Image 1 (cartoon, protein in one colour):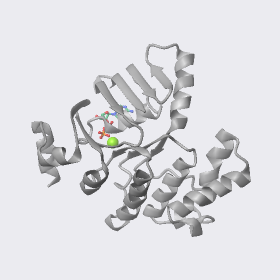
Image 2 (spheres, protein in one colour; image 1 turned 90 degrees about the vertical axis):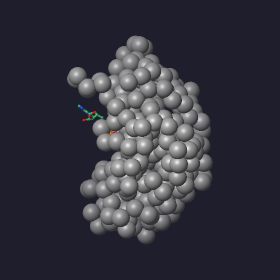
Image 3 (cartoon, rainbow, N blue to C red; image 1 turned 45 degrees about the horizontal axis):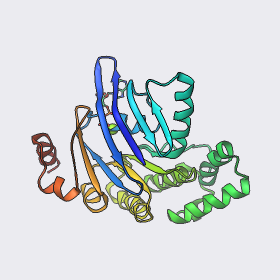
Image 4 (cartoon, rainbow, N blue to C red; image 1 turned 60 degrees about the horizontal axis):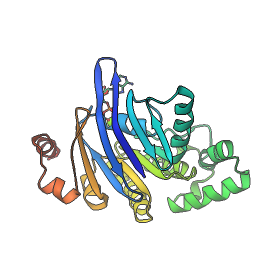
Length: 246
Ligand code: ADP
Ligand code: MG
């Protein structure tokens, strides 16, 4: 489903991603862990076309992006990759001047030429899934953080992505609100969504992930099953990371 080869990204003098290689299958749940500044967000942003890698290739389903391709070919590939991957951020980024329903229907109507009626039906189905149908006419400012994040997930799902990328989706939430967001993510996992999740929620990682990838300093240091990673990490860097979590 996803194959990344020799992906590198630099910001000025800082090599943020160094020749990253990884593959994932459809329906896999990968949790990406690592200390702050290790390049997790940058990797997700590269997979969503928000950052352009300096070198390497990204293949997602039937689309290949290669740093060495022509600019116009790359632009086409990135457009298609972006449509395939839904991204959920730490800060929810909802459109504040739109209702919950409008937040979800906007992109399918604009980008996929869906009719207003079809888009509204889809939005209502997704709002039911995240438990917020009764909030469809509210504005985001009237919702709790957990509710806003669930709307953000529904909005991403409305574009029918093949993979969902979550970048610390619960880090901005009060502890009592993280559970409802994690539950929505667990439901998605059970339904067979392919997911890459950056999170500090180790219980979620242990319960839901098929695989843990541990990064530091822009390099994948370790890749293993959650049990293996949490019980017997291979590298000293990972052991230190886990100790610091307490
Ligand atoms: P993580 O998500 O693991 O905390 P990031 O991918 O956000 O790490 O950042 C990795 C490194 O790249 C950090 O040192 C960060 O300061 C730097 N960085 C991220 N984005 C930019 C940018 N747009 N410009 C310059 N440096 C950046
Ligand atoms: Mg980050």
